[in-house]
Length: 264
Image 1: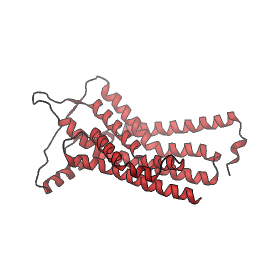
Image 2: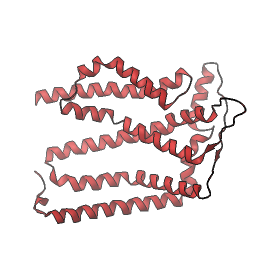
Image 3: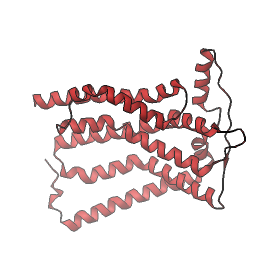
Image 4: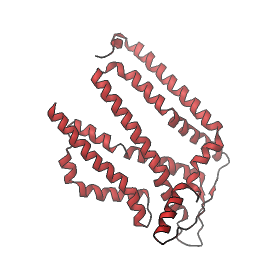
């Protein structure tokens, strides 16, 4: 049964929402200020894919050496073009890190505010959905940080139309690309959850997704090529494989969801 906070007036609910928002903002600010103070550690993580000794590059070089080829060493220095740009970027990165660190608390506070209006079975489903969505989003960010972004940066950072045209990558461009790609991959990893939701609504079926599997594979390859426009098949395969696995997992989830709905 829903919690009997239903007896609260509109203004009491509004006061409770305001308290929740204040707590969220306060914790986010504390996490952001903490990240801001640990500048060296923060940017050691953020700028790690810039280094040719990054773990992803080392693993790819080992794989390349096993096939008889040899990976090329690279170095892409970053530059700053604005007087206050580095300080502003420091604040932006610290703010993003603060949101990321505070995200479990943010989700908990929002769920705590909404849950009294839910029935017990709805609350259990909501917990599973929220937890699954958060885990998948985090997995997408990690995949982007350790695979998608390093491959993208290595290719685009070293690509030249002519030897006479040198690359000068700005710090702002680096950070913007990293944040955008991480967010995009986090959203992309919500495909199984969205598939479950649409299956619950009866909008899609496993047979429909299986019928359009070839179209989905083509779309996945196109998306992977856009995310990492490299010239080698191996990189395209590495990027598209997890997205394809997500699609296949979504088919299984949809099939199971429809069966449970039919049995209910």
